[in-house]
Image (cartoon, rainbow, N blue to C red; front, top):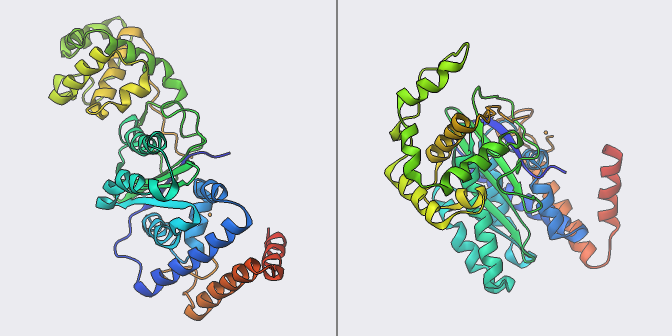
Amino acid sequence: MHKTGIVDLPLHSGKAPSWLFKRMLNLSKQIFDVLIYEYSQKEVLKRLSDPYWFQALGCVLGFDWQSSGLTTTTCAAIKYSIPIQSGIKVAGGKGKYSKNTLQEISSSSEFFNLNEAKIKKLQYASRMSARVDNNCVQDGYSLYHHTFIFTEKGEWIVIQQGMNDQYARRYHWSSSLTSFIEEPHQSIFGNRKEDNVLNLTSEENKEIRKASVDLVKDNPIHLKKYFSFQSNLLEFQNFEKTTFPKRHEIISSDISKKGWQSLQKAYELQVKDYEELVALEGIGQKTLKSLALISELIYGNEISWKDSAKFAYCVGGKDKIPFEIDKSHYDDVILNLKEAIELAKLGKTEKIKAIKRLVKILS
């Protein structure tokens, strides 16, 4: 099962027209009503955590399949169409709305009857997924969108997106993962490979993570001697051939003053593992990268720089591709799904069964 994934999408300007977004809200509500009725809240999260299913959902709702706006608009439609009464809460969003995630998780505790321990666990998952994709997966994409979806039972998923030049990359997370810092991206999807990606969650970088923790457990003052061009150059004299990129040496500015303070704090706390190190406030991209480079320098553990990066229309597309959206047809689709779920709740399941038979024929 795909627990996580990445999709690269070009940035498109503008926003969904109001006539389309209103229909996206309506149609998505009917779709999720059927999913919850037929399956469960857990099944909804399972499907949304699948990058292919999520992409297809955006297209079914009428958005452009290759546009970065599909992610933010579809997540917004989900947030406003799935009521908390369904047992599912959608928190966060694009830009400033992402900063409300932790508060939205907390405010839902009374309705979901979640205790403090479960709330903290959910908030930790939200924070760690963002920290890992921003700091441990150094692929050049800066996060600007974070949607956290969870159930009354404490299951959760994350859909977040980062930006790099004219492309956006989407990251999916699921509570079925076994580790936040070792291969959380079991399946990674993308159509644009970056040349150099420092993926510190890669299994190939397991020894680098271990060595980084060992370095932090020693007094950080001992690390400063490695922040000199001369010391790095001496280490490479034993190699028969060395090709240097534009700047290979590690310099002191690679770790900020706050970074050094955070390393001192990590030393004093004697962090037990890499996850605890990544979770520390102030430990960012530069600090983790510098620790990785020094780990390679001292212990000889070679860093892996591989980029791990590896969709259906039914109502048309916003930009008239592959065909223009027919508003009356869109409204008919919404009405049919709405009638089917309302009749099913009254015990009249013929229409739901007909839809299920149609799915089998088409699949």
